[in-house]
Image 1: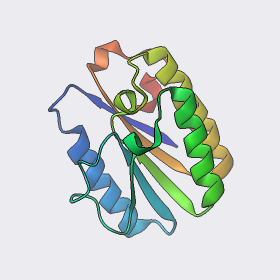
Image 2: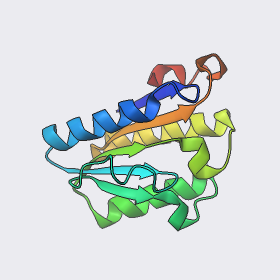
Image 3: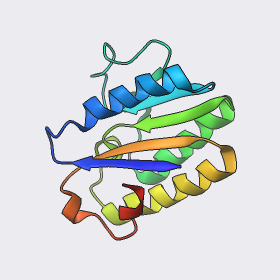
Length: 136
């Protein structure tokens, strides 16, 4: 399962994501991971979730994030939910067609490995590609 949260800056996407991280920590049996572009949420996320500062890992493309996620899962098969805050900022690209490809890949990965993904993207929902709308 992949869920997309999209909205303009200041629309409350990160707040919603933080609430969902806390709910996942309380309700899921596996490990919960939250990937953020910087270390901005270190006081907001429960210590029971693994908070990852993406800027420490040199993620520069959607492909590098894909490899990063595979490596994380290979190191911990107990991951049940991955939250990605501000996807385009993490990878340094606003290419929504590439973001759509990643979302579809996450969906396949989710089905194969029973991992849920929740992703936020900053921007107007009108700019979504048709393939991304199914994840809202």
